[in-house]
Image (cartoon, rainbow over all chains, first blue to last red; front, side, top):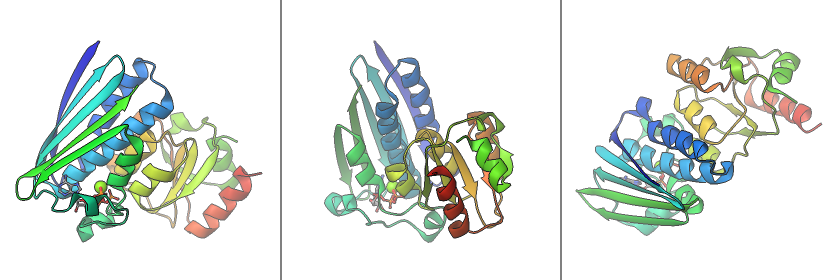
Length: 138
Length: 111
Ligand SMILES: Nc1ncnc2c1ncn2[C@@H]1O[C@H](COP(=O)(O)OP(=O)(O)OP(=O)(O)O)[C@@H](O)[C@H]1O
Ligand SMILES: [Mg+2]
């Protein structure tokens, strides 16, 4: 089995957020993956997707599902992250007031991704963009 | 304890997601920060919040929450209503504030 899905993400457009995670959830349910594992996968995916919407200009998501794992790559064009270790700290956020008003910007997204993935890889170039790779065994 | 039992006991308004009213409730969570809910809410919880935009339904769905309760007489955005009907996750409402609502739900769910 080798399933691949791609999604486009528009920076600033919160009304379209969650499409990728919702679709992936349906697929994983059909594949009889356990609910706890599904929650871990879709929470990380949603957080990563929201980060593109909240912090970058646009991005693309590629989800690969095979027998034993889900690997997701989220690549965005955006400001990039200067200090990834600092960004990973719970509570650190550069979210705008508008974004905070919606209840985002607690600075918990990256740490949620860290807790809910079996492997998390972030690479970023300031002024160019950020690539996030999420991996979970299923 | 089902969602519908809470609706009846506390005279909550049902804005949307009627298909989910028979769902069992196991827990509650109170937060207006979405990442906090994504990180810390337990499945089958009722979630009390002030947020009304459609991402609350996405969060509730991804975390397998039982229902959302809007306090202070707040109403859900149109997008939220549509999304909630599609997902079958009820959005409920009360004129009470967060403190009162949380206290009542706690008393009822933990009984
Ligand atoms: N794709 C990205 N592009 C640019 N900056 C990012 C990106 N993802 C994260 N960041 C930076 O890392 C910080 C921390 O991200 P994190 O997801 O942990 O918190 P947040 O998005 O600010 O708030 P929350 O996720 O709790 O709503 C962000 O505030 C932002 O400065
Ligand atoms: Mg975030």
